[in-house]
Amino acid sequence: MTKPSGIHYELIENGKKGRLLSNTTYNTQIVHKFISYDRGDFCCDLYRDGRLLVYRGSIWDFGTGSIDTPAMVYASLEHDALCKLTNARLLPWKYRFIADKGLWNTLGSKGATLSRLWRVPAVMIYSQLFARWKDKK
Image 1 (cartoon, rainbow, N blue to C red):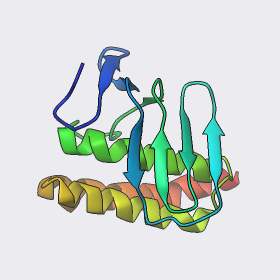
Image 2 (image 1 turned 180 degrees about the vertical axis):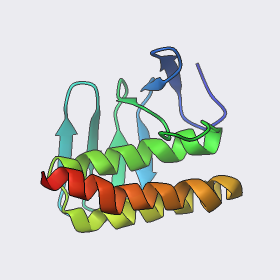
Image 3 (image 1 turned 120 degrees about the horizontal axis):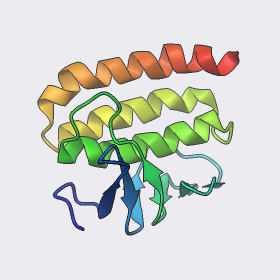
Image 4 (image 1 turned 180 degrees about the horizontal axis):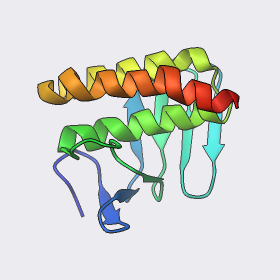
């Protein structure tokens, strides 16, 4: 099933999550060593030049707490992948801010001004404060 977000996915778990039906590539601003992540339900590679490849079959929960507009669905896949890399300690926590900024930029490039105004600041607060605090426990 092709959704208007520009990525191919199917809805699962009563529409609460998506399963990627084709590989999807993002160009991030994260230039780092090569990283490969494979945890069964989510697989991605981050290349040295900043390309992020999320593999077919990966499952993600869209923009948690937000309306799943096409722009949010597209941006949330990249953000979830980068957060998984920081949570797994494959990418240093300092890159979490860049992941959050990427969410902001991607939503802006897709014309999602309203989501940028209220959703992204909430994600950044959670990502930078609560997720990090929870992670240190």
